[in-house]
Amino acid sequence: MRIEKNKIDEHNYLGLKEHQRKFDFIASDLMNTKEILRKLIDFQVAIPSWALGTGGTRFGRFPGGGEPRNLEEKIEDIGLLHTLNKSGAAISLHIPWDIPDNAVHIKALGTQYGLKFDAMNSNTFQDQPGQTHSYKFGSLQNVNPETRRQAIDHNLEVIQYGIDLGSESLTVWLSDGSCFPGQLNFRKAFLHTLEGLEQIYAAIPEKWKMFVEYKAYEPNFYSTTVGDWGQSLLYANKLGKKAFTLVDLGHHLPNANIEQIVSLLLMEGKLGGFHFNDSKYGDDDLTVGSIKPYQLFLIFNELVEGMDARGMDHAKDLGWMIDASHNVKDPLEDILQSVEAIMITYAQALLIDRRMLVEAQSNNDVVSAQEILQHAFRTDTRPLVAEARLNAGGALDPLAVYRNERVREKLIKQRGSKAMATGL
Ligand code: PSV
Ligand code: MN
Image 1 (tube, rainbow, N blue to C red):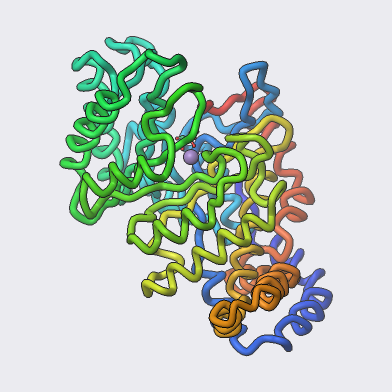
Image 2 (tube, helix red, strand yellow):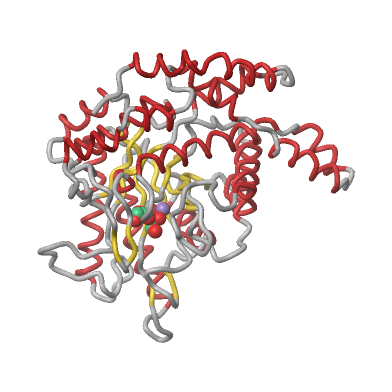
């Protein structure tokens, strides 16, 4: 379904006076409002095709109905969200969950909704019906060369789908690892994986990027073959200039200093992609900013600082994506919340007084350094984000329009209460 522009205009008209008051208040304190608004408008976050259905746990799944039944409907849903917030102009596909059988048609449909095709994701963490070799004991690390070959071929196929759709990156996340001591030889597992990644890398088109995503644990619980940023960076460095590390916020051990990881990867020119989510325990895939908003702010602080230090374009030079889906919310509302949290936090990071911070750091003035960061974090940037959205043609309050328009009810009517999206 689509939300007509006049519905958004109507909503904006009703909220405009109140918004203007709040926006004028924050803008009166800023020297570079225009520049900030430009950056906020340009910043786009890709939505994964697997986040549009209710996620589940191994204990169950409680779908709320009206989920997209095919790739076309997934594109439709992401298009709808983008109409509302103008910040999600890309879709990221997981193969084989979302095979674009007719790439020309799928690409055209994306364009119709103003969407590009972001990173392609391969899947060698599940066995598919009819698959010859099982990934039970890993894919690229597998002791059986034929299983490794199968996993490599799958990635090559995914690259081809991406080429057809105009994507420019491949994300490889491997669940490879072991559950028990002695189960595998770490060095052999690493080297087999490297060999496989090298063959995949060789097929990566010239202007593409290859992202190597790491994860501390799950589904393996004793060791993971791409377990942390050190291992991912090792692979990326060995592979070459088109290979980068991908940081997923949920993929660290408790209390890991993710902002420091981000800073050093940027310094090395090896941060390529970013998956947003939030978590209390591990890879909980909760709504961005719902648990640790200050950590998210500190990460954005390093992202902005590190990208500026290298003269990078915030919007284009890293791959930004949401990677979250869980059990209890309407997934579309959840994505709207996540994108909003990202934009609010990015805006806060843009407000940090960099000159003062450098001065405080040079003077070992710890108190001032903390004050400078927290001043930005405690600023309510919602009016800035709403103004950017308004200028881009979106809704002042996307969630309010979504609810007023009874989108979920209409989707259930259209697709049925039992419609289930593919994904985890
Ligand atoms: C793995 O937990 C991960 O973060 C990878 O990015 C996957 O592709 C994605 O989640 C979806 O399962
Ligand atoms: Mn991820």
